Length: 257
Ligand SMILES: CCCCCCCCCCC/C=C/C(=O)SCCNC(=O)CCNC(=O)[C@H](O)C(C)(C)COP(=O)(O)OP(=O)(O)OC[C@H]1O[C@@H](n2cnc3c(N)ncnc32)[C@H](O)[C@@H]1OP(=O)(O)O
Ligand SMILES: NC(=O)C1=CN([C@@H]2O[C@H](COP(=O)(O)OP(=O)(O)OC[C@H]3O[C@@H](n4cnc5c(N)ncnc54)[C@H](OP(=O)(O)O)[C@@H]3O)[C@@H](O)[C@H]2O)C=CC1
Image 1: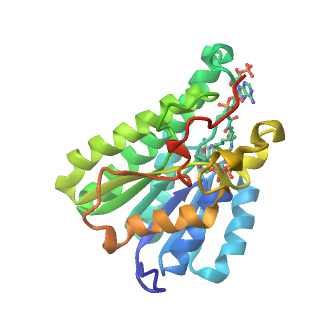
Image 2: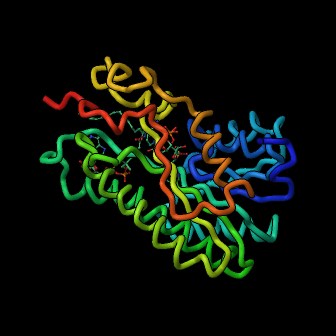
C-alpha cells in the first residue's frame, strides 16, 4: 500500500516538519518516494531534522512562520525556484496552551487563532494560487485536533480548529473544479514532542479515558495523512478523519475540576 515509488516525482511541503507529527509525516512521504520540504520557525531545529531525514530521500527545509504572509510567499518562491511545482501541502504547524476559557485573555485567544486558523489559511491561499490552481491539481491535508465534542480546557484551539474543519469542507467543494482535494486529520492524544510541553498532572491517567487504552503514535498519524495524499484516496475530499483510539466517543476526556 505504501510502496516506495507511489509518490515518486511528487513535491510536498510539510509545515512544522521539524518535530513530532510533522517530522513523522515528512519521513513517511520520503519513504514513498516524494520530495519533501519541511518548514517551521526555528532554523537550527529544521536543519537537524532535514539532516536526519536525508537518508530516506530528497529533503530540504525553509524557515517560514505561517503567521507571516510575506514569509509564506518567500516559501512559495523557494519551492517555485527549486522544483517549479507543488503537489501536496500538509498544514501541520500549530499549537496552543491549556487554560480554562475564562482565563484566556483577548491577546491569548488572538495568538492561538492567528497561529492555527490564520496561519493555515495563509499557507493554503498562497500555495493554491501559486501552484495548485494553475496546475489544476493538488492535495491538502490539514492536521487539526479532536474537536468532536468541543475542546474543554483549550477553547481557543477548539474554535480555531473548527474553523479549519469548516474551511476543509468549503474548499473541497470550491476547488474541486481545479482538481484539488482537501481533507483533514484530527488526532486525539499523540505521544509526540509537542505533548511533552503539557504538564504531567494533565496527562496522568489520560490513557485510561481512551477506549484503546493508549496514546497514539506520530507514525500512526503519518500513515493516515500519507494515505489521503495517495491516488488510493482519489475519491476522498472534504473529510475530517479522526485518529484518536475512540476517545471522541467517551465523555470523560479531561478532569476539569
Ligand atoms: C485542563 C485540561 C486541559 C486539557 C489539556 C489536554 C492536554 C492533552 C491534549 C493535547 C492535545 C494537543 C497537543 C498539541 O497540540 S501538541 C503541540 C504542542 N505545542 C504547543 O502547543 C506550543 C505552541 N505554542 C505556541 O506556538 C505559542 O506559545 C502560541 C501560538 C500559543 C502563542 O505564541 P505567540 O508568540 O503568538 O504569543 P505570545 O507567546 O506572545 O503570547 C500571547 C499571549 O498568549 C497568552 N499565552 C501564551 N502562552 C501562554 C501560556 N503558556 N499560558 C497562558 N497564557 C499564554 C498570553 O496571554 C500571552 O500574552 P502575554 O505574554 O502578554 O500575557
Ligand atoms: N500531539 C498531540 O497530541 C496533538 C497534536 N496536534 C497538532 O498536531 C500538530 C503537530 O503537533 P506535535 O507534533 O505534537 O507538536 P510539535 O510541537 O512537535 O509540532 C508543532 C510544530 O509546529 C511548528 N509551528 C508552530 N507554530 C508555527 C508557526 N507559527 N509557523 C511555523 N511553524 C510553526 C513548530 O515548529 P517551530 O518550533 O520550528 O516553529 C513545530 O515543529 C500541531 O498542530 C498540534 O497542535 C493535535 C492534536 C493532538
